[in-house]
Length: 485
Image (cartoon, rainbow, N blue to C red; front, side):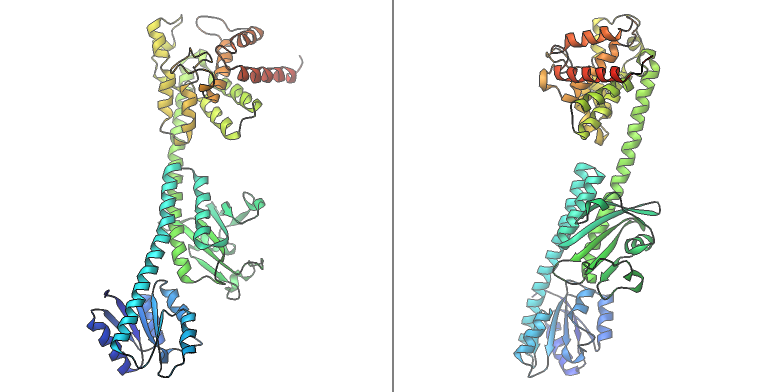
C-alpha cells in the first residue's frame, strides 16, 4: 500500500471516524473537514493525493468534481453516497469525473481497496502529466541549444504548445517597447503575421503583458473588460499566458479553443504556464546569446576595417568584393539565405590577414616563398576568427576556401571544381576582379577591359566558368545602366 495524503470531508462523526481509522491504520496521513468552504480552503493551502467526500456535504448547485480538479489536476476524488443509492446515481457520478463512488454502509476493506485504486490512478496520471509537460520543455531546451535561432525557437514553441493543448490556434507575441508583435503562430491567417501590432495594456494579450497575469476566457463567463475583445464567434475558450523571467514579461502566449473541452480550467493553465515559463527562459537566453553574437560580430567588422586601414591598397576592397559577390549570386538566382551567407563571408573574407605582420602584408615588392606561405594561411586564420559567431557558421567554409582554384591548384585544401563551395567560387571571381582593378605595391591597376579579358582567360582554370559568366552579365548590365557623359 502506498502512503498517501488524504483529505476527508464529512459532517457525520461516525462516518468520519470509520474512514479516518481505516486510513491511519494503513499508515496514511489524514486531514478532515466538515464543510465545502473548509475543503476548498485546505486544497488551496495543501497538496493532497486524494479527497474522500461525503455526498451529504455537497450542494449540487455549488460544488462538483471540477472544483477539486481546478485546485489540483492530479488529485483523485472518492465520493461516498448514502445507503440505498441507485446504480444509476453511481454511474452518473463516475461519468461526472469522480474516480470512485462508494455506497454506505462501508467496510474497512472496501474503503482501503478503493483508495488504493484511486492512488494508483493518481500516480499514473501525475506521471503522465509530468512526462507530458517535461518532454516538450526538454525538447525546447535541446532545440534552443542546437540552433540558437530565435525565429526557429519561437516557431518551435508555438507548435509545441498547439500539440500539448490540442487547440485550434496559438500565437506568440513579444513585447517591443510598449508594443506587442506576433512573432510566431499556428492557425492564424498569414496576413496577420508581421503586420499585426497590439499595445501593452490594451486587449486581452495587452492586459497579460502589462500585469503578468494569466487570463482565462470561457464563452459566457467573460470578465466585462474583455467582452468587447471577443468579436470572433468561433472562439469558445482562450487563455493568454505571460512569458516572464524574474518578473519581467518578455511576451505573451495565446491559446484558443482547447480541444476536448468547451472551456479552460485552472489546471490547464497551470500546465501550460510551465511551458510558457520555460519558453520565456529560452527566449531570454536566445536574446542574450544574440546580443553577445552581435557584439562579437561588430568586433570582427571593426577588425576588418582596421585591417583595411593598415593598408591603403586594401581600402574598400572588402566592400567592393561583397558588392560584386552578391550581384553574382543574385544573377545565379541563389536562395536569399545563401546570398546572405555570401554577403557576410565576402565582407570578412580577408579577416585572417589581421594576423599577418606588417612587414609581409605591407611589403612594397613581391613576396618570397616563405612570406607567401604565411600569406596563404589567412583563409584558415579567418575561419577560426569567426568560428565563435554561431550564426556565421555557414560562412566558415566560404572564407576557408575562397582561394581554391577550379583546376585544383589553389589553397588551403587543393579542392577542385564543384568540390569547392559555390559561395567560395563566387567570392573568388569578385576578389580576383577587384584585385586586378586595384593598384598594388608591385603593379598598377588593370584597365577595365584588360581585367575582363584576364577573367575570361582564367575561367575554367582558376575560376568557376558559370560564376564568371554571371559576373560578365553583371558588368554588362552596369555598363548599360551607366549614365552617359
